[in-house]
Image (cartoon, rainbow, N blue to C red; front, side, top):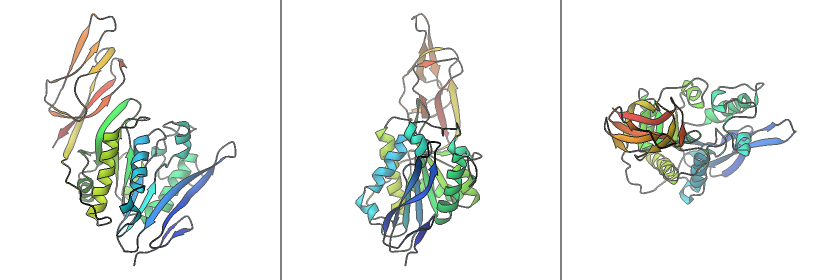
Length: 315
């Protein structure tokens, strides 16, 4: 028999689908902000999966992925295990459509947090205290930053066998070897032996339906692999990226990208051009390696030194 789940003194029984509140936080206006958590607890034992999004308030693609997952009939009737879904972790920043919290902090650098610290530290502490102990593994959904469009990709640590096994079950188009960063949810979860992988797709404040669909399908493949759902899903080809590099602008001007995001390119291939706005200069941007385009800067006006094209090298 599946066990009951308790989140901040709120109990979800086997066979129960329920929305609970992670915690509430008071702003300077005395406004109460709550973080809803959706829990689907099946009747049969199995893994507990976390799907989280909205760590940064402008990362709308991940929020849409989790919303779509929650609306599927096979998810509402899990065959085993449990799903913990937090569509919007950073409710405050989501209200403002901003990346950072009102005090300028990045929530994903506030972990493990503190119950008496800043707003970000308190939210991080609640995730570590109430969510992390009850899950087996999770996917945390993100997007590129302002005007940075990431091709659908899953980031994990290749040297950790369980990380790579989860990534291959999810099977995003690109699987990137990505080391841990201090203060992140993924890093602190790893210290507790709770693998959380980061999915990146699209750019902030803009729906990217390729990224959304790949994220939804990856979640379904992962849940099917653990028999949480019964769904016929085709295998998804994926490439493992072991190294990466950025191509930067070596002069300022108007940037035109000539190659599609996600494409494989050879060293020396023309990727784009930077043009002088007055029409008398055009500088070609050539690939420095054989690899895949994993991210593009969509900023049309660039300055010397700006990161333009993110390239991943398979291996």
